[in-house]
Length: 397
Image (cartoon, rainbow, N blue to C red; front, side, top):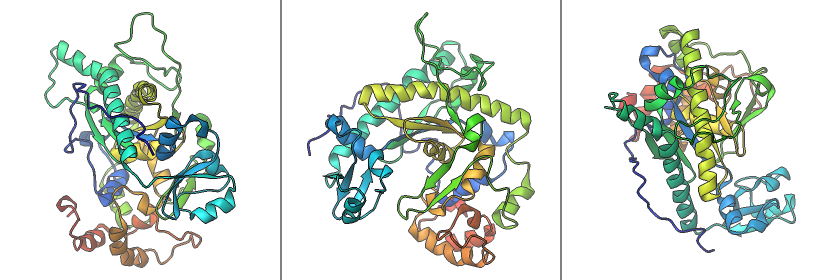
């Protein structure tokens, strides 16, 4: 297979590094942070993180090179399995990690392309990352330049970008959000639209409405979260989500500490930040599409984990906002393996404690551990278990 495109490492005046403030938290730390209560002094409600995830990345690489593949079912295979497939193939029952023979039974006219050579995908991923980084610089960086021009204290003020996987990346834009919402003081779901401080006078920007989990029509929308390796998935809607919360364990310890996710005023301020960021984030998403041809989803929330979940709640080609105080509705029934960086070894080490503290499990149909199950386990049991793992971060001790 030929290379999809050439990669040029152009200098766009934007720095990024593996030590970015867009932290790569360990899986266990992720779920603890996602469900712990937060005060304004903790600054998490003041944080704004974007996560971009390319839709059907491998498939789009081939579609861009061969446009005739669009709208017909095809998959990318390695050895005897399907690595991924496009949406027309998924519509007829083809899925990731399915045997090629089984996929052909599901869809006799399925086209299977070889995906053994990963280098073209890596090059395409770098093109998307470069465009994302430049888009962040173009549309959020203008506010950082305003701070410098107006002699604001810009120490510790920077936009942070980090590459996640081959087809995903993060941006922490917290540093400029005060200026952003300052230029949109009445930002709300009723008047949200794309805006950009650097656009030309008289220029008409596109109308825009993000998908905000739990608002309006989205209250009844079915949200499916799937863990690719095992195929485990959970479903929820905002209106039908269970009111069940784990008793005791880690969840109980969090409840005892402090109020969950701030007061009404703090939530309103957080919502304004996330909505404003989503408006500019849409400009970034469109910029990536214009520069590379790749369709993608962007999730906006207050942490890398929640932003990643947000980008996954409505696909494809969308921008989604997840307010943190609504996140437990999605996280609690979610497969535990879906937590970033929580791998097979960690789950194996936790299994005895998951079984011990979930003997009254009332969901026999589920063949996988959920985040709800995990939150029933006391913190001391989790720590004592994970202390035996060499890869466990010292900060989690």
